Structures are given as structure tokens and as C-alpha cells.
Length: 353
Image 1: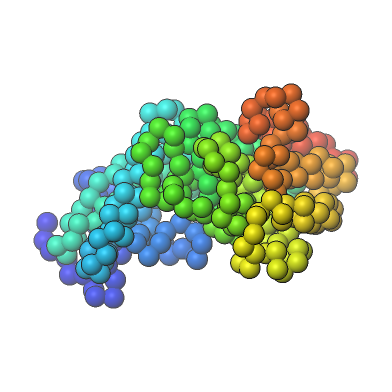
Image 2: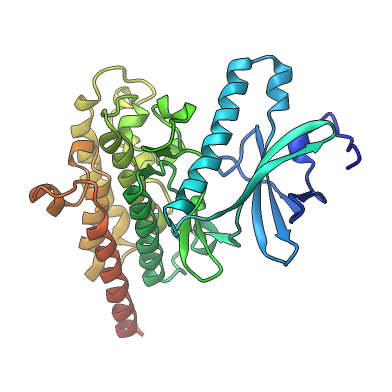
């Protein structure tokens, strides 16, 4: 393969359009993501197609810039992050995790004398943010509950495999070709059975706008379940709230407590902040959802968000699981809740037509 000249303004990872990866995947279009979405300053994303026309998503990683910068620690971290993201995707395939976008291949290619590593994954035409714009009243309520049920099922499947996603948000829930909603982007995840990635030591690895409070305050509980799964439950509840309201619950609640107690100023014990956030939840959740959810369904939705997003991670989870000593972070009851709400929403919509 002849050498490809790489413009100085961009790295080799940004120069894959027109190339063929592993003699199979033709890179077609560069995807430029908005801030906060998949991708970073060390990776570039593309749409590709196989020789048989199967579409795919390609994420390419640029390590050369870090090497030239001379920061060996950051370079080592970036390589470990790539290895982890590749390995956790393959682990999902081995474990039969079907509700996560599947990995097709991974490898490396030389571009302009530089080695670019990449991951090729299942393509999705739309994410939930595009297919069901948060807060948009034109989206059918039943469709929102179906999407939330699918997202909850995907998260439950991950948890059963010992993986916490840690970055559940509207842009990381995607619509597959068969109409099933899946979760994507395991770059921020943690897995009990794979060597911990560098980000595992960080308090916060996902997008701050959706994050649970204890991580924003830098005071998470110890243990995989109490720290990682409790984070996922909060993110799921925030996804529910955001889907209907169009804004993040955590952002709204933090603006309703005294400024001196907010995470960017407060340096004390997070436990002292919990009652204030609980009070904010009791006020905000029903008020914000009231105009977005039909009255017959409102109480159930409010309760789901309250349980999933409880400011105290020790109280987070389905109330029946906590009351009867079952798996506090189990999601099966929430799957059932969303399934029932979808059916009720369909019946309600027929009665109002």
C-alpha cells in the first residue's frame, strides 16, 4: 500500500475515508460528533460498509499525537483505554449480550507511516435523541415507554454479565435495523471480569450533565455494585426524566439547592447534601412531569424516577427489592413497569382519539 500524506492539521486517524480496513470494510464518510457525544480528541468516527454492503461504525484512535507530545503516561493510558474498549466488546459477544451494538472487527492500519488502531461495530441510523427528541410533545408516550423498556433490558443484560455502562444518555441509545433499541459506546464502562481500564479509578467517567450526584461530589460508595450499578440506575432514571421533560434531572435539582451546597463549591460530606437534593426531587419530579405524562400514568412515572434517581445510592433501586431484601440494583421490576406503562399509554391514547 502506498504511503498517504497526512495533513499537519489532522492526525492519521482523521484520514481513513476511502481506505479499506482488513480487506473488508470500506470507509465512506467521516462523522463529526457534537460535544459530549461519542469520540474524543484522540479518536475519529466514520461510517463504513462491507464488501457485501453491510453498514458499520468505525472508531479510529490516534496515539501518535500523544507520542509526539512526549507524555508517556497519557499515551499508555490511551492505549489501555483502546484495548479495554475492544476487549469488553468482544467479551459481550462471547457472553451473548445482544442488546449492545456488536463489534465486527478490530485492528490497525498504517496511514502516512503512522499506525491507526480501530474498532468496527454495528451501525445504527439514529440515536434516541434523534428518533425521539427529548421533551418533544409530538413523540407518542407509548413509544417513549417502549424505548425505556428496551434500554432497561439492555442495561439489565449488561449487569448480568458483570458490566456497568456508566454513560447511559439519549445519544448512547440507538435504533437498530430491526427496530430494537440498543445501548452503544462501552468506552466508559467497567467490567468485573476484565482488567480495569484507566478510567476505572476516576469518580466520573460519563457526561457530567447526566451523572449521579455522589460522583459529581467525588464521594461514591465502595464496591462494584454500590458504585457502578448505582450509577447506572441513576442514569436510567435520568434518561426517563430527560426523555419526557427535555432536560436533565440532576442539572435541574442542583440549581434548586443553595449555591454553597452545589458540587462545584461544596467541600464537605455529601451526606449533608442528600436531604436538600431529596427535597428538590420531591418538588421538581412531579411538577416537571405533570405536563408531559398523561394523568393516569403520572404517579407511576414519578415513582420510577424517584426510585432510580434517589440522591442516596444506598436507597436507590426498586422499593420492593429493597423492602424484601432482593437485589437492590435489579432491573427486572423496572422492565415490567415500563412494559405495563407502554400498554396503558396505548389504551389511553385510543380513549382520547
